[in-house]
Image 1 (cartoon, rainbow, N blue to C red):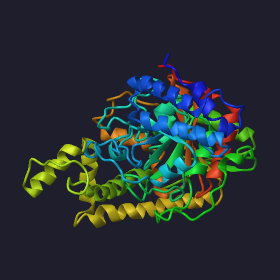
Image 2 (cartoon, helix red, strand yellow):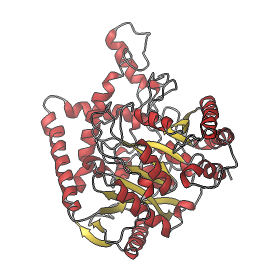
Image 3 (cartoon, helix red, strand yellow):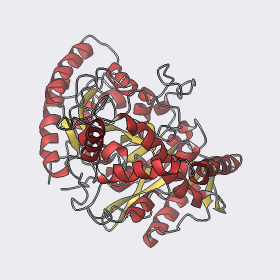
Image 4 (tube, rainbow, N blue to C red):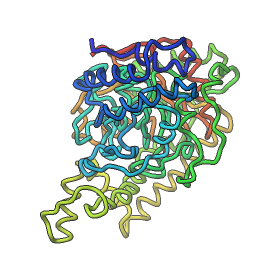
Length: 488
């Protein structure tokens, strides 16, 4: 069995849980964590870059701060960050060969907040290229492996961030979610993953995929840590005009308030395309919420739910085609310098730098935005988006939460869906509508099917992450799913 580092991560989280004094200094903790991560990564391939030297030096600085009595919420805690977020002076590749040698000259806002909170960024995790994927098979460094079954995918695009937390390599990680890219890998790996309300967390310094859909969010293997991490990274950012100027609660201080009297809506299409065993898992979870005082109403109609998949795969590729136009070999990215002709150089730069899935989405988006097709495709997708938002608003006029499976089934085998894009896209059937509507949603562990984890998705009202976390805390208290650790 691979060392899970569980004693080390619990030690690191003494600051979070107010535990007795750790037996490790930050320096000792980081040294042990780095050694363990290299061992784990020989099997998982979860990291693009492990920041050995930086983390070691940072841990010494954190020990000095701790000894001076400085109170920092994440002092000395190792954390992994998806390689979509800029980290000054260190590679930020977005999983793409195009950015293989890109070194940012600034920090993303989320990275800056983590540093200010005392966290030790221990590595940049692998992701599908430019966050385009549902399996983490599309990074230029190769596929990431699921620690529960190394032959299976960890989900995507934040698969590296999920896998390293599930393996207990680190206690916390940060991902991004454009169509389910935090929640789906959280489900596949048996951990917690939260997509905040659009605008709750800054996107400044995040490599752009689909700007109107994506959101940065936390991942952890217990709800308390997840809530604390969200408290650290959330908030208004003058550098990002899409962030909301709203007070950020101390999410982790209200987890014991319960859900008595809260109303849960269960959609009538909840099991469309889902694994049959999934139904029993979700029903068992709903029973726990009912026993804790929640009111559950099944068969709620959300008419536009089925429209989310086609709407997403017009809106997201369209925005991607615009965002990725900057990678031309002149302003950003690698360049095919052997071609002196401008157009040959541009064509070969993008042809060699981008993978198949990115090319597929750029072509789809460019087509949808082209003259003669904009009204026929993209404009109709925007109308569907409005319908989806309105349907969610109607539900939340009467209910506190909507609950669904996070994914139709557990993790699938590496390579199983790589040649079938439509089947791959269906992995996000339950998560896509939430990105289009902009609401917050969380995936929580709710059992296993064929020894692989599955997740329950809880969707909430705008800016009501606190209620989502309270609801998840009730379930965590009644179950032990998050205490299961993979052996690989």
